[in-house]
Length: 170
Image (spheres, helix red, strand yellow):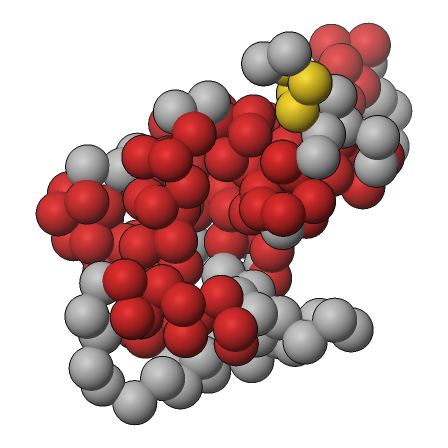
């Protein structure tokens, strides 16, 4: 079977389109399972759902059973102490089960809302979500955030890149 240059070019283009679609899916994950619930909370809290989806993908890759080596739990990788703190702030009186996607998403979005209202600077918000508020406060000098940890810098880049993709999708 002879292939013409035209057929080879078409095959290469099709290959790259398929590769792009696979890479795109790997980058955004299976967000649809949680999208509507996230959107509902985000509308109530006035938070960009694309930001929340990007945080979830970066934190747990949409694995509701994820547990980090440091003890962060669930979709939004909440530390139990953070979840308890936020639950008190928002008068969340239900049992806190961070493996329950709805509980985890609600408290995680409430935590993002708390950070957004407190700092009004998305870099500080994302750095705080990733590295912890206390640590990030020490990174702010003369009103400027200087992140010394490569992991946190990369975290912010990944969240922002994924957020742009979710902006396109939704």
